[in-house]
Image (tube, rainbow, N blue to C red; front, top):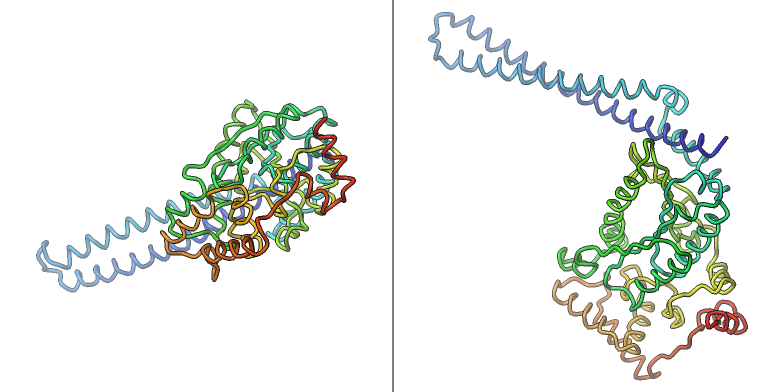
Amino acid sequence: MSINHALRTIDVIRCAGKAAHTYRTAQHAVRAAHDEHSAAQAQLHHWNAHIHATRGADRASPGRSALRAAIHDRQEAEHKVRKAEARLQRAAATAQAFRPALNRYPTERLRRRATTVLLDRLADHPVDLIRAADLIIIQTSSGKDSLVAMHRTVAAAKAAGCLHKVRVMHCDLGSEWPGVPQLARRQAERYGIPFLLVTPDGGFLGMVENRQMWPDAQRRLCTSTLKRDPTGPVITTWVAELGLDRQAIVLNVMGVRGAESASRALKARLALDPRTTSANRLVLTWNIIHELSEQDVWKDIADNGLEYHPIYDTGLERLSCVYCVLAGPDWLILATRVCFALELSHPETFAALERRINHSFKQGVTLNAIIAAARMLDALDGPITWRRGDALRRHLGPAAADQYLATLTC
């Protein structure tokens, strides 16, 4: 099966599922409208019988008023029935347009399975996938995984002769380590890729202030509200700029690795994004480094002389917000000690917000307690220190770090 044919099939399956859902919704609406209509008819029959029994009643009697009300209610119910039937007809017409897909994939489970199989096959051919795409967007945090995802995407795009399709986007939450947006720009400029910096209104701290609550693992609003939502309009604009008279194929590249967590291990290398997919664009989330280990990532960085953020040299393994709601106490204490060493104001700023909204940063963990623990460790052991290349020394050894630093200097 060709790449283009597979992509068209995936969209047909998507439309089939949407048509089936619309059809079921319309059928439910019709049943509800019929129930309302039957109730109105029963009420009208009651009042007709009442008026017949009191044939000589005055026109202004309660019976005739109630009859007129019942007739009005019946008319409204019939109107609702007609609207529901019209919706059902539209849904049936939509379903009929995709009848082959509905026949082949009659259940949601089969549709999902067929889509997964097709996408998994496409992920095995990155160069062909890039050739078939119209737009390739790299979502970067400028962290080590995003950096390697960018490098591998660019390598595949160059092999396909399609580097002009690639763009880079970074969301600045305003609560990240110093130099993150600037590093993201430099990483993109290395390959000559257009770069866009997105700055959500209020940033992370503004969102927390408005909600009077910190996010958590179940409500990761820092991802949905500050990253995913602002990027949607950008994708819409970029697709419109293509000026295509057909559905655009968009690859949304993410630096997600399965080894990071149990939930990420369940993610596919290539997946349909139903939230941003529409009639004019088919958006696929491409976790291009999903199968890499942390060691593989650092080896890619060392072998290719890729510039990583110096915060990794401190012992922190992730480049995220200075204080991440998903991090454990040990990580938060280390981040606080790094802030002390760099003379950053983040600990005081975050702790003040925590007191102001009267909501603990994490359940059972307050930032005041984290800061106190960090101060105690600094008092016992002294301020922490690190050298450029320490991250590579930990993961690949001193020789690899020395060679990397020499390459970076050159």
